[in-house]
Image (cartoon, rainbow, N blue to C red):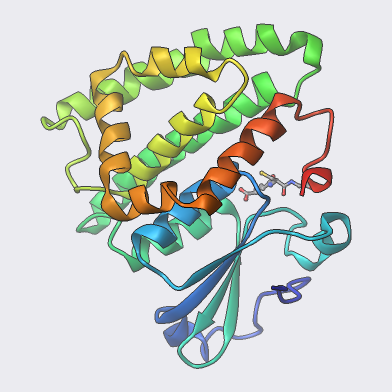
Length: 253
Ligand SMILES: N[C@@H](CCC(=O)N[C@@H](CS)C(=O)NCC(=O)O)C(=O)O
C-alpha cells in the first residue's frame, strides 16, 4: 500500500476540515519495520480497535522527501468527509490518537499531567539514543554505563516517587498514554544489546514494574503483542539496534 504526498501538508485553511479531523474513520501509520518511535502509536491504534494499516517504507531514500520533515513516523487520517489529513512528529501523533480513545484523563489538568509523564519517558528514550546508540561502536559500552547510572536512574527514582504517591502505584486514570509510553520505553531498552541488564534494574522498581505489567495485561494491547506483525517488528528492532551505525534502516527494510 502506498502513501500520499505530504511534501507540504498544511491546508491553507483548516476551517473546512476541523470537524472531520475529530471523526476519523481509518488510519495509516508509516514507520520503519521496528518498534522504536512507532511502538506507542501502534499500541494506541490496537487499544482503540481502530481500522489501521501498518505502512513500511519501500524505498526510504526516494520516499523521504514526500514526508513533511523527511523523518518518520507519519500518520495519514481518513475522515468521515472523505478527506485525508496528515500528522507528523511522534509525540503529536501519539497525543492525537490518545484523545480518540480516552487515554488523556478526565480533565484538562489530568491531560497535562499525562503529557508530562509521556514527555519524560520519551526523553529517556532520546537520552539513550544519544548516549548509547548513535555513538562510535568502541564507545557504546561506556555510553550504556553512563546512561544506566545517569539518566536511567534519575528517571526511575523520580517516576517511582510520583507513582507511589498515587497510592495504587499506577497512574490513577486507569490506563493512559503515559503508561503506554513508559511501558514501551522499558521494552525498547530491553531490545537493545545487553538490554536485559537494564530491564533487571528497572524491574527492581515496584511501581514501574506495575505500570509495565498493567499495560501488558490490557487485552487489546496483549492481542497486538501476540500478533505475527508485532513479533516481526520485535525481531527487526533487535537486528537494527545490534548494529545501528553499521547499516541504515532503509537497507533493513
Ligand atoms: N522529531 C521527529 C524525529 C523523528 C525521527 O528522527 N525519525 C527517525 C526514525 S526514529 C527517522 O525517520 N530517520 C530516518 C532518516 O533520518 O532518514 C519525531 O519526533 O517524530
